[in-house]
Image (cartoon, rainbow, N blue to C red; front, side):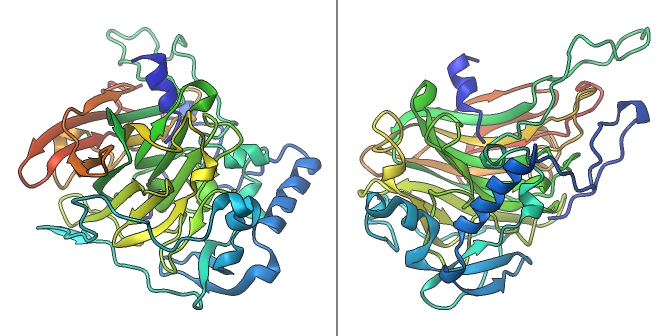
Length: 427
């Protein structure tokens, strides 16, 4: 794998059981269920409190409500949402829907045989307002700094030493797995494009530590070095960020190669919310069952003719990233790469994490057991929906997490991916 491809993957998951350590000597230093306070000092705490005070001003909140999944939200007057206030004229006029849709894009989703679509959320906010997750210091103080809270991968994770002797004179030592903190299994296609579209099944992966995450996502990207830019979307389990072990709809964007300019969901200025129902960061209320119903969602990015990056989720367009966030070397006018798959963070300094990717099953387990992305399409340079033929695949370590590409008449181009992490061949 090239350094370029690896840098592109510094990207980019209801209830998961907290796994018991396999051995007391191997247990990580961080309890999985304790609330950890990591703020470096009182100056940084004051910065975080100032950020919260400015993010959603009291005068802009018209009501508070609770979504079906239990998330508390603040209902903000749509014209006074943070991104529009901070970007001002640069964001352009508020748009409520894309200027156009790709040729061949049918804005509906039939779950298909044996599939159960996610139940749609009813509007909870008054007309003229949109929901934003209610944020408190209880979440922010799990991070060292405000920049760490906004970052894709938590900065406080420690690395592992692959050369450490963890076995006492074995006849045949178990195979060591990947030692990087960020691990993935994904598919990709280099092609000039204006978006990507696919169907995901949602799972309840075990995530070993609150500072680790597991996710399934699709994303578009373009640029090199500090000019690398992406918009990302999928489902994610990340207790430090959401305060629970459930999967959440997540977004992430970066205008500066995962520097300080981007963030998750609506936690900095960038996302423009238009839907009165689905909002970034919300808890997903259903998940797939091994050998049972497969809960599926349809997700797409589309850059319309205004060059805004619009998100389609489940049954409608829910908001966008304005063109003004990006530059000509990045995704302001076009994307050059579409990617889709899974990612985990390994924060264990002694052994490989037990955190699942996808369902926790390797791709060979197949339908009803493994996580998948199916009916994968990209939006061509002429804004036509195209089959994602010619996909490539990559993974950090196939013994820990893997990906398998395929094609058939009903699912088109699709993939199974994931794995259990720690095991006989992933130590």
